Image 1 (cartoon, helix red, strand yellow):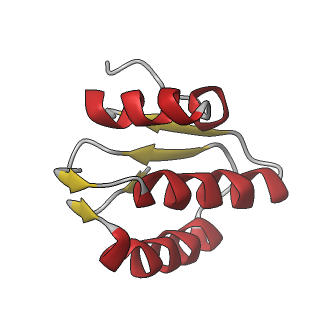
Image 2: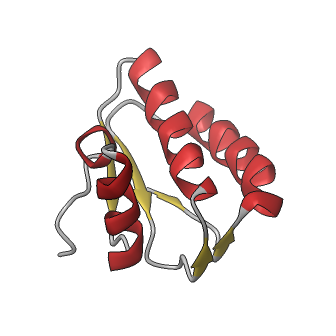
Length: 92
């Protein structure tokens, strides 16, 4: 499972995307799961970061999902119509 940083705004998005892309390359076989529980401050840039992670996972033939997403994040994804693509998992 990969962790999103606490802050992902336009200023941090490029670094967050690069960090997650590197971590994705090192993951063993199996699904890619992003844990968003630590996400505290974010803007719509986080959607772009997650979409890039999903795209990379798909390119490598891996399933992708986001767990423990804050309600504001799921609302943003729904607003942009990408919530099905990001596969938000139940927060269990």
